[in-house]
Image (cartoon, rainbow, N blue to C red; front, side, top):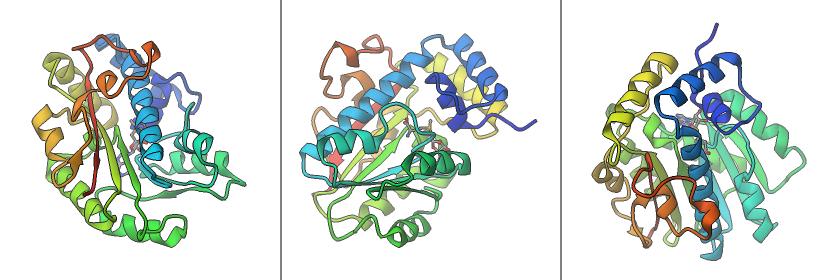
Length: 257
Ligand SMILES: C[S@@+](CC[C@H](N)C(=O)[O-])C[C@H]1O[C@@H](n2cnc3c(N)ncnc32)[C@H](O)[C@@H]1O
């Protein structure tokens, strides 16, 4: 039997149907360790929605969603196309299953596409983005790195990968990052980190606020900076999936000046 995958476990946490028994079991075990985990997943999706809407309002008309995962309610192209049907969205994931599902739901949609690429190899990833013809690097881009950088180990230099992406985009481009954090609940972060290594063989790298803020080096932070997921520009009560001060995720948005 294969190992659970981060993409399918996350899908299971969100109540999706693109996962196997092995993924559901691993997700259930993680929920036993940290019961509010499904709320964290919802909180992360709500941040994604707010960050994308913010970027569209700031003038961004092309989005590259790296580590996009298995399509679920409130996909980036749906959020974007509600506001501008002509805007373009490219989904990227290292997991071929996530890419196949994305292509299936995008069939017939000329404004959106999906490719397989590895964030840890930004030059190859950027070349693959260029080959799609969907995204033009002479115009500002909205980069989305939502719940993916904590799957990149320190030795793979996650901040360096963000810097390589920054170098490739024009001024007035934006980046949104959300990241699992050990800041508010180090014990729960430790339990989940160990569980993820045992189960998925991938490992989740919970980082503190300083390390996550470091990933935005060279970008101009948008207010309110790097904060807990529900605290990034909440729009209504519906964005408050988690208790204040207890989110296991930090997030921020920044602009290239
Ligand atoms: C937890 S899911 C997040 C999905 C979506 N971004 C969200 O926040 O709702 C993380 C995704 O990142 C993908 N991923 C992990 N490492 C990656 C890498 N090096 N390059 C690209 N994608 C990666 C996984 O396959 C998974 O689909």
